[in-house]
Length: 455
Image (tube, rainbow, N blue to C red; front, top):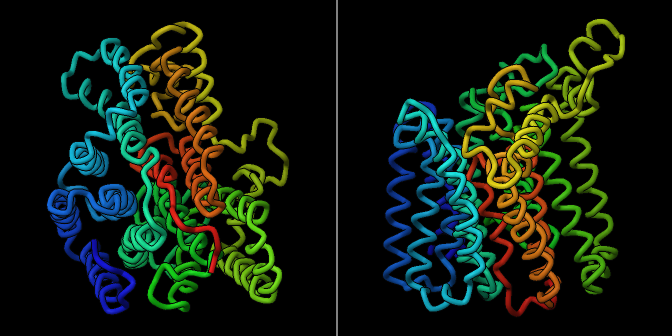
């Protein structure tokens, strides 16, 4: 893995990612081939270095950020390439560290809980059947593999921070390709709803989710007094650009998730680390500056959207905006509650094994009006996997996180743990596992050694 403590190396990689972002607009096939090439390079590097420094885990985190760049540019390999690539990287890391895998048998239990639903999925078209299974199964499988890889793995602080700096690099390609495809000056806001036009012509929810991931990383670095880029001003510049680009999508999930995740990490550090409290109080003028910086950026973005950002986050509907009359049937969840109702109905009808991967879409049609894809992973696991899905959730989302948190002594490890945990849990509420972003949920299992004092 490149040493990003060397500014020259770090700046060179940033320039490369800026160029890749430009090709996403003018040579759309290039990011796809780059995605494949770096994955092969990552696997080679893992093998020759015997996965030293948990590099497979950080390469998988890199895949998270670049997946959306690949999709915006025009997926030319496979739509779910991000999941395929991350699974391949994690498998290589697991094979190299096979002795440690044997002590993590409960992750195999999680994997076997996912199997029965395979035999309940049916469709007369073989290709549709394959897509139904792969679209809904790959996410949980990636989650299981990442948990198996990351669990109780330890790295030293400088390696950990270097790996996260590397995982942040796709942010530069992302902001460039979005800015070229959807310049702020050309955006028009006439509708209270997520805006694909502002998201580079792609799914606003997915773009907002990954931008939230990048914002969380850079802000975690800022509160511990570190840079995620080579320069302080570049950190703040990326915060401003990412925040504006995330907000103008008018997709609330990714933005709200990163704010909550960051707040939870801050609380952990404030409560558990006296040096952090003293430093924060001492740096209060800078803290106040940061708050005004965020408020000013949000105010500027709201001005760009002609006040539609305010309408979106306060739950105002288009009909309310036109008529001024409060809508009786308005919902802040924008239809996700109706999709969840369909999932719950399917679970009640088939509580043991569920209805099978992709089969809940028929129940969504009853409550939502058409066969909408799952947006909430929790209700999807209930409907398509039944009680086995419920057991999967209890182990993955409750038992393992609580167990790990209680056994982790380092406040900084706990802060990163809580941040990644909440980001992933909230992401799976509003975007299910459409992206490979759930890898970050298991990324919290990296335990940082030697981080008792923040400097």
